[in-house]
Image (cartoon, rainbow, N blue to C red; front, top):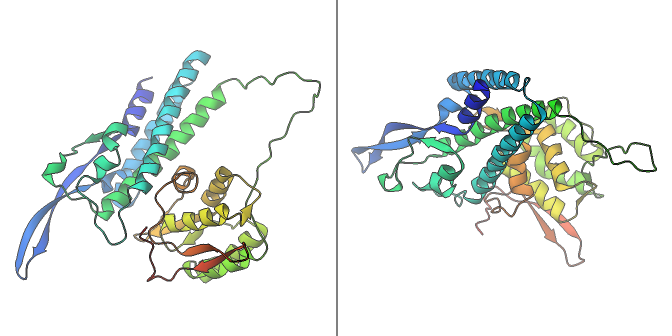
Length: 317
């Protein structure tokens, strides 16, 4: 159980670093500013060693599960799902506390997210110290959580595979029921209109696959790369779903569909769209996207129509 305990502790611990940088002050002066850094706990660049170490620890933790009996495995599963719930809570808070367009993150941003209550944060300073929170830190925090979530999800699946399958209730019908999974279906005219709005955010190579996905649910060979913010893409599908322009699936199924078929670009890196990240936008009452790419409006006839939002048009409410 040594590696399992170590993995669970590491999964919930974030080692913040304090870095110093010089910032212009007035026409000729400079001042030294302290800010938080978490790049070393992401899967990118030189920080990839963090991912390798955490992934190895996760594999060793999975081996610790093998000698455990059913009651012990059930207890481990409860612990893991509790951590999973805290990650879900993080994503809702993450989206709800995004600053309005053009505004900086406040010094108390990490406290606003309730991070000290959800996880262990090393080197978190009191708010009155005024340690700067930059956009790069917020992005790295999100990427670090995505990595941890993926490894946690793998371990949960390991536990579930070791537990005996639940016994089905005996009935007169001996034919086993087959699970049915829905996928999004767009009402007439919406795939073409949505494609016109989205195509500028995808390369010409991806555009053809995007149209095939929207019109006939033909999956692309690899995730389609959205050249914008992940919350913009999630917000677009949320608007369509809530206007009943997407039918045939539950919100959770829509989130899994997006996660499987799309990724996005930030800081020249391909970023994933995991279901929990998407659920915090689509399945919750999270703060609306501050820079949407489309607007679904109700027409006098009662029907809904899709309109693009120009880059200079932002929603502040």
